[in-house]
Every structure is written in C-alpha cells, then in structure tokens.
Length: 487
Image (cartoon, rainbow, N blue to C red; front, side, top):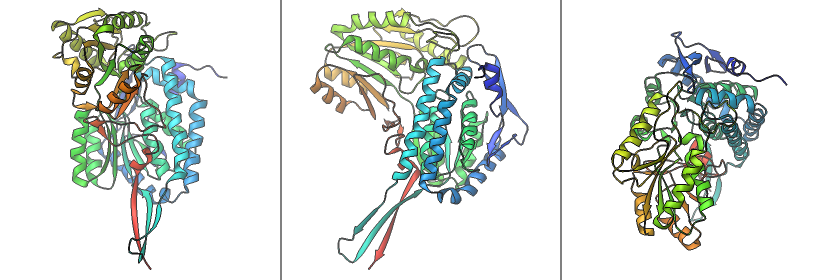
C-alpha cells in the first residue's frame, strides 16, 4: 500500500471544471486559492468559473437528460453502488483531503466519508423502487395510470461544512431518479466534490450527467442558470438569508426547490434525564464538526434542579478536548473555516458575557496561525443575548435554566428556525408529549445525532423546504404524471 501524503491527495484531484465528462479550464483562465484553515497556507488553485462556464455545464446537463432518463433504473442504481464501494476503498485519502481543506479532525472526516457513501448505497436501492399506480375511475368508465418521471436537469448547491456528504445526499437521489445535474460546491471546500466527480466517472456515470463548476462568484454564476429556465430543479443547502434570495430567483421560472437552511437547535434537559446520557448527547450535538453544523445544539435549556451539575459535567468534558490541526493524532477541536467565522463566534460570546452570562471555560480566540476557537461553555445566558437568536456555527454551548415543561417548550420554539430539537427525559409520556409540541422537522430524543441516510432530513419554518434522505428523498427529483385512459 502506498503511503498517503498531503501533497499526494491534493495532487491527485482534478483542479479544472468537470463539464460533459471532461476536465476543462475556466474560459477566462482564472483560478482561485484553496486554503488550509489550520495554517492559512494555500493548498492549491482551482478553476474559477464564470457565467459562460456555468452555461456550458447546463448545456451538457440538458443534452444528457433524455438519454439518462432512459437508462434502466437498475443500471442507475449499479452506478451508485460502484461509487459507494470506491468511496469506502479510498476513505483514508478522501478523509485527509477533507481535513486539509475544511479543518475537521481526521477521524471525523473519515466518518463523513462513510456517511456520504451510505447515501449512494441507500439511493442505489431506491432507484428500483420508484412506483406508480393503476386504479378504476369512480364511475367505472375509465382507468387512472400514475407514473413517476425525472424532474429534469437539476442545479445543486452544497456548503463547506460537510463537503462530501452534502454532495452525495443530493447527487444520489438525482442519479437514482434519472436527473442530470450541475453542482456548485462551496469555494472554501471544492476539492472533495472534484474528487467525487472523478469517482463517479470511474463508476460509469455517463458524460454530462454530473457537471461540477467551482467558482468564487456563486451568485454571479448561478443566478443566470436559475433564471434560464432549462433547469427544472434547485436543491440548496446553506444559510436562510441566501435561501430566501434563491427562492425569489426560482419563482420567475417556477423551479422545484429543496431548501435545507439554517438552524437554531434547542437542547432541552429535564431533571429526570440520565445526566450521563445527556452530557454524551450534548457533546455529540454540539461538537460534531466543531459546532459548524446546522444541526448543532445552539441553545441549552436545562431544568433548574440539574443545571448546575449538568454545567459542571459539560464544562469538564469540553475542557478536556485537544485542539489543533486536524491531521494531528488525538485532536478533537480543529480550526473554524475562516477568520470571519472566528470573529463571529468571538462577537457572540462577548455579547453574552457583556449581558451577564458567565464563561465557565474558553471564551477567547487563540493567538497564532490558523482559525482556532476553543470549546466554550457559558451559563446564566440571558434571553436577549444574540447567541440565543443567531446560529453560532462554532464550539460554544450557552446554558439557560428553566423551571416548567411549558416554559421549556416556549423557549425552545421561540425562534424563526425549526430544523432539529434535542430532548432528554426518562419520562415516556413527557418524551412523546414534548416531541409533538416542539416545532422542528427532526427530534433527537435521548440522543445527540439525528442524521441518517435512511431517515428524512429537513426542517420547518425558516429552516427549509422538502426532505433529503429516507424513502421520500427521491421524491424531490420526481414528477408525478397522471394518464387518463378511456375504456
């Protein structure tokens, strides 16, 4: 087995645009830097697409659509199955690549590769289960045929925090359904998606079915494609602010949309909860991906009888987490994605402290190279603190006490977001009662992780539209056609 090196994994990835099954330079010849967030060093340059490149990618997807829609469902599934196997075979190399461009520790990056691969396995199996229907008309004079067909060319936009999994979660159902795609990964983390494009090509994906455009001008390149009208679907994962703008653009041509937007997840602990399990769950819900996740626990509400003990235990756990470059053995807290992220987290923590919150650990950015912020716990966080309303996207756990169940539910639901809520209690009746009252698309009941390729992922309110994963994930890429038959 060859030795895996940082230079080797970066050098093995295509740096150009992937359009129509070929690697091509941006027509302008421009490139942009990809940086290592743990050092600030430039890893490499990748092609910087302009509007013409975007249209070339859309042209390729449109040209390939009819042919790919006619490919047998079994074969579409087999392509995904082969890609699943290749992802697992190359897990170590892909994990290192992800750590270099995004910062998360190697062990966590390897876990994401496995998670990402599972979307391909899941949708490989769903490709052959696209169903339809046959029914007798109520008056008996005719028959109803119902069939499902691909939506058509789809535009996919993925974020930087899960650069591989967010890609497979969109690409998997699109391929399974028979849709061609143009995907734009985040400018901070393009390498994982470029590597995935190469893997899908090796797995036998026909030319033009997947087209990857990397660009430093996301809005300038994607808006014309949305307004063009030939794409029939947009799937976006990112901030609510950007999601609202994209919805406005999609309205002009009435594009189908899937939106997985921001979160402000409450983490509710009742005094009858198993505190060991609650703290374990808190560490998962808060520190997965260094807190840079839309599913991250953003607000901790702990019943007054156990708030002191919970805070003590969580602080001890957070203090014990080694921080450093994600490639270093044992590191749990890697860098944030960029300096802007550090400034935002610093501002939110300072605002809370200025309003009376107590910092139990952390609370100050780290000097030196890289974009590091330590694991932080605050208690007695007032309701008017900005981090109670804004998505933190960092390793900060703000704790606020509550007294009654009604109070906990009211605090948890007091947000425009509704992606996920976490709930810890040993009382079954309370568990079901509160789960039904919490305004979120997903509930973590006595567990700190909800994501699973076999489950429907998505939120309500301003956390998004539609679902990804599960048996309903493929529906986002299918149209229902009714055929009336006269007898």
